[in-house]
Image 1: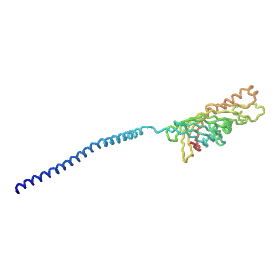
Image 2 (image 1 turned 60 degrees about the vertical axis):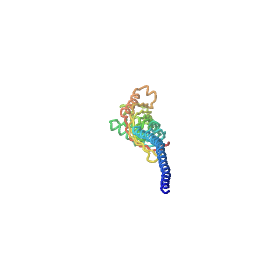
Image 3 (image 1 turned 90 degrees about the vertical axis):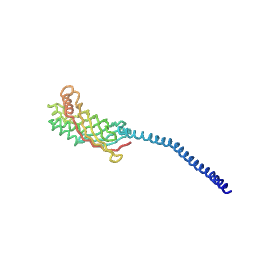
Image 4 (image 1 turned 180 degrees about the horizontal axis):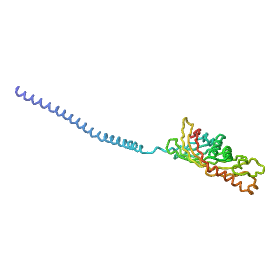
Length: 281
């Protein structure tokens, strides 16, 4: 009876262990399948994120590379400068200047010539060999003159104050000149019918250029420093004499022509400009 029972017990024990082992292997296999499936599912998402990141990085890198070869942006703001100062030893006055898009600059300046500047011109005429009559004419003409200057130019370097300007200047004057000075200009005595002084009407037309630099030390204060030249290439003069005297003698016309040629022959005026004002944007 024991030998019959023992094989039965042994057979029963092996039958219960086999299902447990199969369940364990099945759980392991299922877990492995889940891990592989999750990896396959997450791989496209990670790859897509990597491609998206690369796609975002490419425009940034291209933009950084392009910015190295891109010129600085052009100033597009419009600004108005109101300033005053001197063009030594030429003018003392005030004006306005407008900054336009495209680095363009236009402006106007109105002023007069103080006596110290006028005497500089008279002394310069004497230094060049002019007689006393010409020197007196030059000093008095500039001393009584009013000037209007129109200018236009460009700032060749964006976002900097460096300026290149061209300008036109009209100088109008009506000095009173002693007849003795007019005789010296004519080189002869002219019968002035008892007049000891005469009014001279004259206008000079000048053209020139300027190189300058504008700085803004404290907003909205603007200081402009520059050097330039003005050449008076055209002039017209007329003596205030009676028409009868003008008609009876050609000397009057000759004197007027000599006055004009004096300024066109020696009319090169260098100057240093110092202007200060405010900027309105």
